[in-house]
Length: 163
Image (tube, rainbow, N blue to C red; front, side):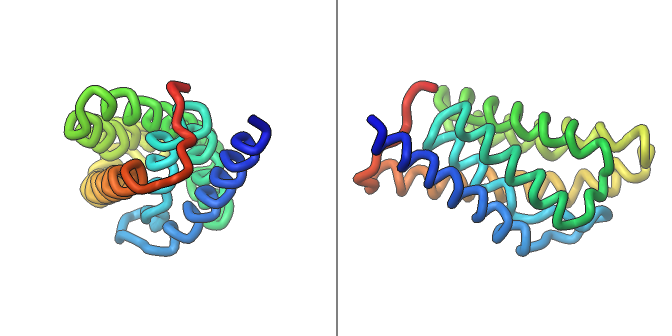
């Protein structure tokens, strides 16, 4: 039992670090912080469960935002909370149907979540942000789904539970 908790916490730490590495692969956007940072968080939501996955994606996002000098300022906390909710929704709908999970997570992360920029940048920033963020969202969710499919079938370490 303790060994499994240690493995899960260690894996969470590795996935948070991978979030930072993924953030170095950039997709052009008006904000400049869009990359492959959330793939590890989405993967962890599928592989480790709701709570560990939401912790990984939230801490991963906050670390990436900190490394970019918090470009959204206080909205960073709102976006981190959105990422947590999106990861949970992704896992929920993925378990029903993986294509549905990918579509809903892409929509939530690429189109719905950026509405948070309206108070500080208006519709211009939102419209400028949505295309690159939607593409990045799809790429992150799709990659995490592929990796999860491979790892689930081949991993000797089973850490997923219904959490």
